[in-house]
Structure formats: C-alpha cells, structure tokens
Amino acid sequence: MYMTFIIGIIGKPSSGKTTFLNAACLTNAKVSELPFTTIDPNKGVAYVKTECVCKELKVEDNPKNSICLDGFRFIPINMLDVAGLVPDAHKGKGLGNKFLNDLVKADVLLHIVDISGSLDKSGNLVSMGNNDPYEDILFLEEEINLWFKDIIAREDWSKFAKTITTERRKVVEALYERLSGMQINKMQIIQSLKSSNLDNKNPSEWTDQDTLKFSKVLRQISKPILIVANKIDKEISDQNLKSLENRYDGPILPCSALAELLLRKYHEDGIIEYLPGSMSFEIIQEKKLTSNERETLNKIKLKILSLYKGTGIQNILNYAANNIANQICVYPVSDINSFADNKGNILPDAFLIKKGTRLREFVRDKIHSEIAENFMFGIDARTKKRLGENYELQDKNIIKVVTSSSK
Image (cartoon, rainbow, N blue to C red; front, side, top):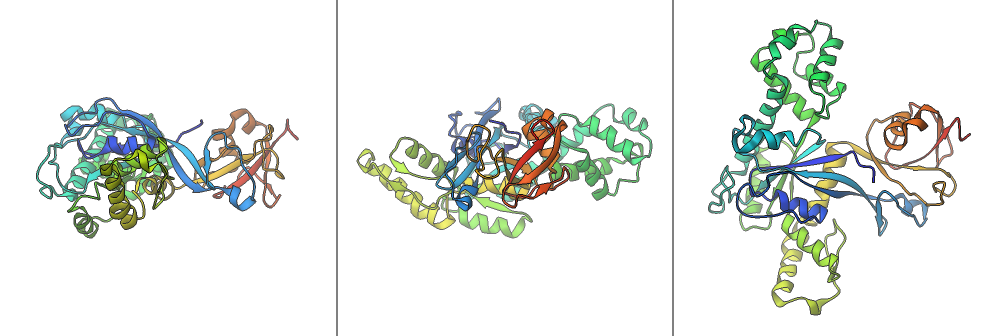
C-alpha cells in the first residue's frame, strides 16, 4: 500500500496515546498507567473513511490499495505514537529530544488530552478533576514550538544567518535546506515568514523573539495540532470539555479510545457487527458474552455512542485528514467507461492528496515518475473532458492518464 500521509500522536504520559493508536490501528502496543511505558515510537496503519464513488456509479468495486465496506472507502494512513512529553521536553527532560525527533515526518499532530483531569504534568495519577486540561495544552504546544526553535536556531545559527543575503528567495532556500527532513516545504516557509512579518528582514538581524515567532508560526502551518479530549466517558469529563471549549480557540474533538478498542476487538472476534465511525453496533454472538461484558457494551452504547455520535476515533482521523491537512480523495483508472485498471479491477485505487494538487504533480508523486515524464493529458471519467497538466484535482475525481506511450 502506498501511504505518505502521517499522523503523529502526542501528549503527556498515560493520557491514552497508545490506547488511541491500538484502537485506530488494531495494534497491540503495550499500555500501562505508569509513565513512560512507551519509549520507542509505536507505529500502525489506520484508515480515513470517505463515501466511496461506487455508490454514485452503481458499480461493484475491487479495491487494491484500500478497503470498501458498505459503500465507504477506507484509505490507509500511517500513525506514529511517541512517548509522553513532560515540561522542558525540548531541553531533553524525560528523553524529550529523542521523542520529539520521532515526529519530524508527521503531517498532523493529535494531542491526546486526559479530559478527566486525573493526571499531573508528569503523567502520575491524581484525583479526578485535580489537573486542568487547558494547562496541558499550553505546556505541550510551548514544548513543540520551542523544539522547532531549537532546530532552526541551533548552535551555528549566527554563522548560518550571516551567509544569507537579503534576497527572499535565498532566505527561503537556506531555511528549506536547514529544515530538510522535517517534512516542510518552501511554500510553508514563505507563508511563515510573511505571517511573522520577517519576509523583508535578514535572519542575521532576527532577535530571539523573532526566531521564536517564526518557529511558532512555522510549526502551526507545517505541524498543526488537533486537540483530542480522551476519556470522555468519565464522570467529570463532559463538564471539563465544556469549560475547555470556552477557553481554547480551536477545534476539540471528544473520544473514548478504550471504547473504540473494545468494539473493534469484539467485532474482530465475530461477537458484534461494528463499522468504525458508526453510532451503534449489533450483537451477533450474545452467548459468548458474560454479564459484565454485556453491561460494558450497553454503557458504551448509551453513554458514548448515543451521546457523542460514536466513539470519536474515526471522526478524529477524518477531521485530521480532511479539515486540518486538507486532503482530498482521487481515483485513477485506465478505462473511463468501466472505471477499471488494465487488469479489470474496478476503482482499484483511492489516493489521499492535498487540496490544490495539480494533475501532473499527482501522477509524479502517486503513480510513477516515468508516467509523469511521458504525460500528455488526463481525462475526467465522468465528463469525458480532457484535462491539462495544471488541472487542479477535485475531491472524488476519477481520472485516466494518457501518456505518449499509451496513446
């Protein structure tokens, strides 16, 4: 499977990061209430859910790089769960530098917040409600911003800055090279310089505050953070969520990672029928459940699925991809009449790409560089219209690519 979109999972120790990963990916990473159970990053494959075009076209598809269930296409993405971060992580506290560096290739960061407020800043258990989730958001975002600043303004900054002329193009090129490996592109650097009011100021003249401001803006643009209010089923959680929504200027999505993990495992064992993102499930092997298990499933249905329209996990993955990272879905085909590839598979591939991607760019990055070199034009399978190399792809486009060798 071809995947380039990566979601990083961050948060303080014991907030539920690894449970979120296990729930989203059905992995078996070790979970514990003890801080720093995760040392090396845990990896998994999750899925973004979108309505498949097979419904519209009234065809039976044969997905190869993704999955189609009940008319919904599940497109794979990579997920990365790093160890818990504590205050001064950017200085190396709690091995913070190592953990932060694991995030360099992430496109979006999910901050898993214990909305019940039952963990102190180091991830140790305290009485429920004793910790303020808003403070967790502030300290962690500051750590990520300072980590960016440390990478940009590392020890040779003064020497580096003096070598750059005032020409903006060269400033962008130099910063782009300095940030290589961080999954940051030149347009993001240009936007950050402009938003920081530094696009006409030579880096050699930047103050420490200038560097911090640029680092913060660049982090917000290149590694946006989505707040996830985990453990929403706890007694005080809904009250804390409402309070947090009044104080934090940004989206906050509630979830119960543990509930999703239980539902997926029962589904995998054939005990219930459950589609990720659904607001309900059906018990199909009730005899295999104990009375305690039936009670647990009933609580999940009444206190989580009904109240929050799902466990929140699938909604969070979709929101991160579609609303935060602006990803859209495109289907390449070889036959514009049957919507099949050259082996007869109908709608075989569904790719996530960033909104604004041009057709030739899509061919080069997602299909094959050699095909991009021989590119002549594309064809919209719905309208049968010819599309040029600079055509801006739209969500749920079905595209045939014509090359000089295939004409």
